[in-house]
Image (tube, rainbow, N blue to C red):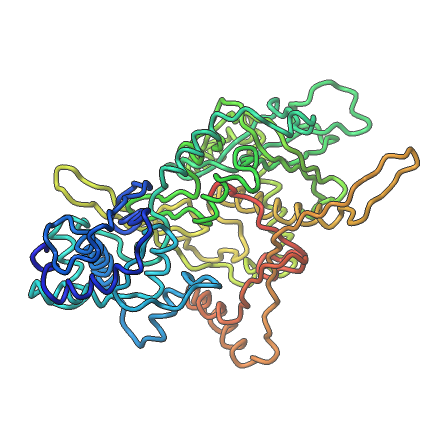
Amino acid sequence: LEDMFRTPVALAASESLTSAADDTQESKDVNNEMTGNNDDNSNNINNSDDNIDTIQTPTDPRLIKHAITSLQSLLLYAMQIGIKGPTEMQNKLVRHLFRPGDAPQEESGTWIPEWNGEAIRRFKFFRDTELGKDVLAALIWKRTAQGARDLMVELGVWGRHEDTALLRSGFPIRFLEEEERVSKEAENNTHDPDRILGLRKDLRNFKVYTIDGDSTLDIDDGISVEVLKSSDDKSNDTTDPDNSQRRYRYWIHIADVDRWAPRGSPLLKAAERRGTSLYLATSTLCMFPPNMSSGVMSLESYDDKHALSLGVELNADGSIIPSSILVTPSMIQVDYRLSYDQVDEMLDEGVGYTEEWQIGAMLEAATKRRAHRVAHGSTEGMVPFPIPKGVVSAEYDEEKGDYDVSLKIETTHNSGANVTLEGEGDDPYASPVSSSQLIVTEMMIMAGEAIGKWHQAQTTQEITASDGLVQLPNELKLPYRRQPAPDFKSREAESRHMDFLYAMNKRYPHAWYARRFFNSVQVSEDAGPHFGMGLACYVQWTSPIR
């Protein structure tokens, strides 16, 4: 490569590029997010030799600058493997990388003084691959994206199974040193404003369950049941579920991320760079650093955990009693960390109705909630047999030196096992076979509806009570998810065909066909109905860690 970059063509290019790079702080984050370098420190390049006519040594700054730019271009070209179609279609794949205020594309091969995340984002958006193609030509290598990718593998820059789609997306694949430093500081931060103000309630007396997949580490939701005495219940026993005079309050606890990553903090900005966690076949890319997402934030068992808790009571038909909604910062302790299969087994064997009666109580509430939503037009009634989801996982085998790949079919009718519900006379509106899936799904949806109703009940004006106390307005903005109802009237022929597929028991074709009627979901600060869920309002409130 050194000989190649010392050619007259490369020298001319490097001479034309270095005049714009006189800053002392240069080539920062050279390969971060492209080649795996996690160094966020600046690499200073001495510019004293920029005016020398010929390259005298391999450390000549012009040679280094041109080599770095060419390598980045080569990497970018290799990422384009599998991308076909017209330029407009290819541009759509990177339009999420554009930011208002981005400068126009620099001349091909332009030296970028600071190789940081923003520079790489723009580089990927404009897709400058010309220098990369020149490198392949000089090496007498196939000048295609596949050829560039093969070269990266042969050089050891990438592995055989490098996820080029992930690299192309611009999603940060590792945390910078600065982000890891602020996460360590946050982990050791004992300052808790909610506790100081007396707002954090002690709910450690509740029996809290978490229900997740076997491999889940970032546990951010827990559920529990509180027994409320009725006015004529004089006993002191609050654990007996058989007393019909008692009422239940259902609690959903989510990890209090704001306790560790308050608004405006560097740690929250690190999460905002990602926006979500990515669960891939070979790995998981967390939104927060692992010491936070699977550490202090995660609702692990037997430890005191900071949470934001919501309590709600239900009417007999499964609807929420608006006046019963409670929202509070809390301190909880998780008693049971369960998988979906474990909960199903507990219910099948009767344990979920005796020793762990809270699980049975939540199943009863979830069944009412599902019926309530179906009665109000949710898609569970319209499409009773949803399309299965295939989950691909890959585990590296050290002995073979390669991955073992497995495929699991997951539907709402089981907990991930490849089992199909069959039989004559099945009720299409019957509860899913997996009761644990029903519990988790309905409890989380109920929480989203309840927080929306709670928000709408908050005062938007300052109120002065008779005793002189002032209630300040709640100016909190929440992300309401809204979905308009399908328009069946204007598509009568298609609607009849969908009904025909259902009548012929064509379950999955019916589910696929029904999708064409659904409108896209809109996120708004204003409340509105969500057709797919059969709710008057819904806020995305749970899963704050991921």
